[in-house]
Amino acid sequence: MVRFTRAGALLGVLGLVASLALSGCGDEPGGATFVEGGQPGVTGSATPVPPDGPSGPPLVVTPANGTKDRPVSAEIGAKLPDGATVSQVTLTTADGKKVKGKLRKDGSSWVPSAPLKWSTSYTATVTATRPDGTLGEGSSTFTTMAKPGSMITSGLYLFDDRTYGVAMPVVAEFHPGIPKKDRAKVQQRMFVQTDPPQPGAWHWVAEGTQAYYRAPEYWQPGTKISVRIALAGIPLSNGRYGNVDRTATAKIGSAFEMKVTNSDKQMRVYEGGKLIKTLPVSLGKKKTPSSSGTLVVMEKKEATVFDTMDDPDPENRYVTDIQFAQRLTWGGEYIHAAPWSEHVQGRENVSHGCVNVSMANAKWLFQRTKIGDPITITGTERKLRAGNGWTPWDLSWADFVKGSALPVPDGGAGPAL
Image (cartoon, rainbow, N blue to C red; front, side, top):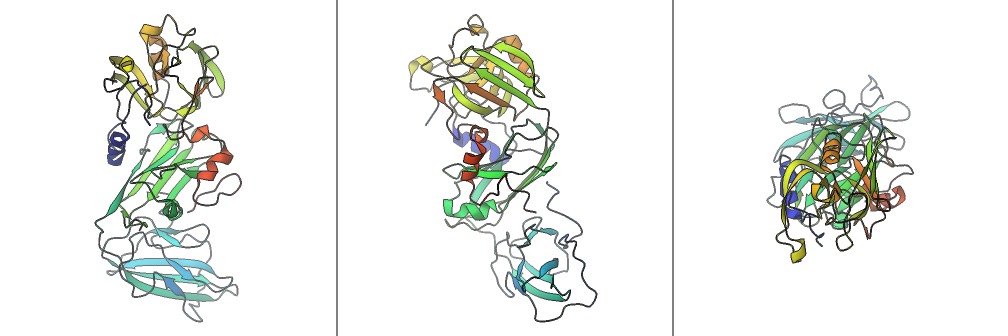
């Protein structure tokens, strides 16, 4: 297994340009368009605005009129009369420029499609239609806060215009972690939309440093996933504010799945649900076993170097050139070519936790796999530890939704916008 430093991974993902860091095998250590909607400033609601104009008392709009120092994550809302629904929301800058946005599907508020500007004045106008067809209207002028000095950084393990495997989770990362009492309001600003539509849910790791989004089953091949982690300006209880919005739109490719059984030391490869190849493997020896569970390919390197010279156990220290490496865990488990173990592959486990395959089979796999393809390993001496890699598929759906900071409907939630 390869020793891996989580701090290094965070720096790479925060920039969204560097690949995941590599070391070597060793023991395991401790713009999206979906938010824009319709014309600028319009909710997209099918409710027509009657021509007679507003009547009755004005609506009370939030943020309240005259307020200052509002977060740039502010959403537009209003206190509505019984039975009334929002017909239209318009948000403009002081010079009359309209801001794009979209009404939440539950009608609770209107979400700007990008963070508001720091230290800027806005005017919001909300029109609502009562059950009798008459209109109510309200407006508010408010000012956003100056850019704060204490911010929380974030990352998104998803890139525009990439094609991923069917097990690719949406992975949001936060540093420092989101306090438990803040996770619900942060999760409310984490938007995912799929085409074709598939319900899903978020799951937070215990430390609040990552949140995974997945569906009850693997994504349908050909699915388009659009994500907005709208963290910019969110105030947290620890005095920090979110730094930026992160967005990505990606595609799910063909269904490619690997299944490894320790009992016979074979990997069976499936494409589109059909077995296409069976190949021998050597897994981790008893002292450094491979992890049993459902893992996801996180990174691919055609050639790299595994360096474990800092391992506390002298027996696990080495520097080795590696070909066709595919990362499975943060702790350092990979699928990779191991010509030195070809004579025992299919018969004996001799690795430091990695899935050893022959040079020819490693190249064959490498040419076909995608980031996000699943591999399930069964029958080893160690169970996959939650958070050691992208591990949301190692949980049942019932257990996965328990990690959500918000209630999840049976079968999963649809898009919030």
